[in-house]
Length: 364
Image (cartoon, rainbow, N blue to C red; front, side, top):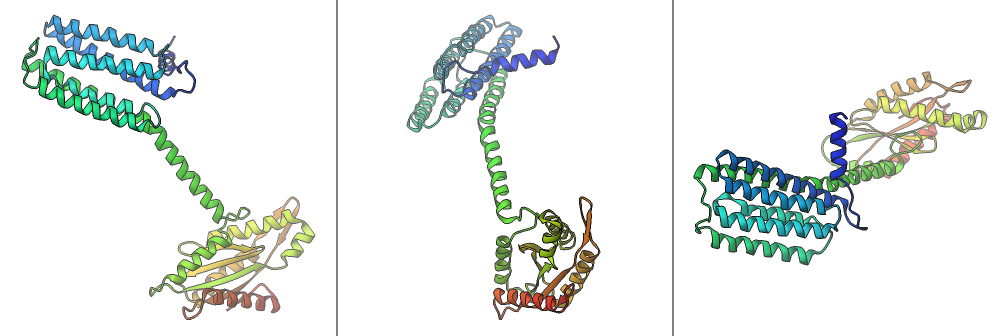
């Protein structure tokens, strides 16, 4: 058996679900991981005691190693809440024992924070119980401070051992807190990220024409209203309404699939050419709306002429059929003395004027 398979089996064993129904698998997995961390912590402290030839310290940590190993085993047979309270009782017993035997300066009292954090994340709601538990832990921490700060321990340790145990305790406690916070916050953050993405997708769907991928009429109106409110020096714009010449004939002659292909091809050219601050949307049917912010009519005309020629040179293929199309453009400058609706009507009027004059042209 290779190392990778062994590692996967260990992960699967730690992540084994509870037998009880309607219980969070994540909570029991967190408890097991914390217990494993505590067991490693006991092992390190036992080794430290052995190195400095403090047999009492080594035996002390071996005993608690056995206690928490038993709690770990029980996690596969009891309910999650039962395992949690067994962990809490075991941890309180450990804290009291350490304070009595080795004194306040070892820093083991900070494991109360691990207990508090684990309890807060252990279940949904139960807010009154959680805050009551927090108050109890806080009160206990204060009481322990007054009892043990100046009290002489049963087994006094040298300053070097105390400093070493302080470091080990600090690392273990921060590791446990980080582990609890990471596991319980990860799903929430992932869910939040998915909701953000989902909302972005919904907004995009609401503002996008499904066939062409361009913005739709709704988004175009939002953009127009935003531009109309902007009264800065560079806030002027030109507006164009254009449509595909004889589009109904294309649909009637070659079918709606060819008509859809024509719309997508034309939209593709608009996307290529309407870059930067320029804006393009499918206005409806075979009509498109093009906006040129900060651009007067003469400059917009030059850009539209380039687009018109590119559309005319374009070939649209569908199965064995290949056709060409042309478009007619109505261009107007927006004057802030009039409403945006009036500018749209002017562009629309010029579009139909171009239709009457033979199509495939820009009327400005």
